[in-house]
Image 1 (cartoon, one colour):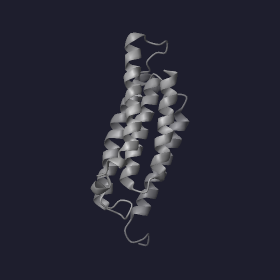
Image 2: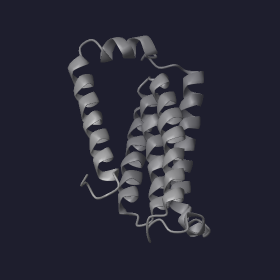
Image 3: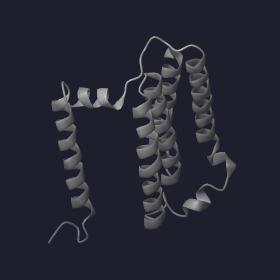
Image 4: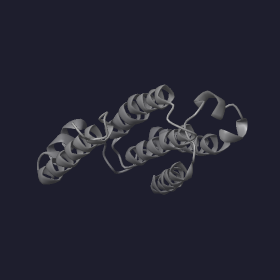
Length: 166
């Protein structure tokens, strides 16, 4: 499982760097989805399948679909113009497909290894995660909530019509 952890971490970092360097928004979203799936596999390799499932369902599923819809609806500029046309060529899909294939092979190997010979580490359930987050890490959780609130207020301020004057 250590090899799966490191390979997933490399895929996550590589896809995140590729996401940051893409000029087209839709291409960046594809790499971001692969990065989130790699982080989910990191959680799975650490013995937290609940966190991995939440990562896939909430972030890679729901939030990324929302991002894709917003990008397609807004059509903000040359980086996001004609999102369907940007993905017509197969060459645009090669990078995300290769990274996703590596993740799929890792997941299949991890599931097969867990079925054959379970490791010494135990599975961390949702109750243990909740107790840890709201026990010794309560201050960190509260700081993150304030950071998210500041991001929400900043996004509202930047997104207002009229350039900020009212």
